[in-house]
Structures are given as structure tokens and as C-alpha cells.
Amino acid sequence: MTDISIERVYADPSGTVLPHEGFRIYVDRLWPRGESKEKFHYDMWAKDVAPSTELREWFHGNPATRWEEFNRRYTMELQSNPAMGALLSEIRKHQYVTLLYSSRDTVHNNAVILASYLKSKL
Image (cartoon, rainbow, N blue to C red; front, side):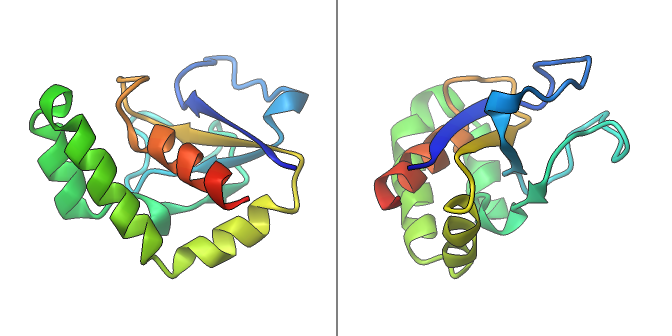
């Protein structure tokens, strides 16, 4: 069984990767602002499973009131996303997986939804 956790890209300014973080997957469509490719520690960039540009832009217009609808729409995107098969296959190879996201909101972001969706599929 794979243990899936989430972490904000900017949570650890030292860039130290801990053993319990395991395989690190960046799950946003856009590169994290201010992060260089040399400093940012990730094993996979799964931008194809991030919310569509249209959905992301709609959600950022008012995340507090749009969270439930965003959750519903993003879950629908995940259900029909052909990239999910490869992502699930890769995740199954690892005991620990950390989904990395760049949003400032630690409660209302796509990684929260994606983690829940992945756990239901494993």
C-alpha cells in the first residue's frame, strides 16, 4: 500500500528531502514561481493531471466560495484523464509518495483533491 502525502513546494526552504517523502511528484500545470530547476527537488512533474487551465483560472477567481464545485469539476476531469493510468502505475511502485503543489492555500488546492482521488484508486 502506498502512503500519499501532500506538501507545499515552498514548505522547506532548505530543500532537504526526507526519507518519508519518498517519490516526489509536482502536480501543478505551471512551474512554481521563484523555483529553479536546480534547487527544486522532485522526481516527476505530472502536469497532465493538473486541473485544466480553464478550471484553474475559474477557481482562482474566488476559491473560498468555489471549492465544492471545483472539487466536483476537477474530479470529473481526473476520471476522464488518460494520464491517470500512467500516474497510478508509477505511484504503485513506491511505498511513499509526496504530491507537491505551489498554492498558498494549504486546504483548498488541487493536490488535496488529487491525493484523495489517488487513494480511492489504489
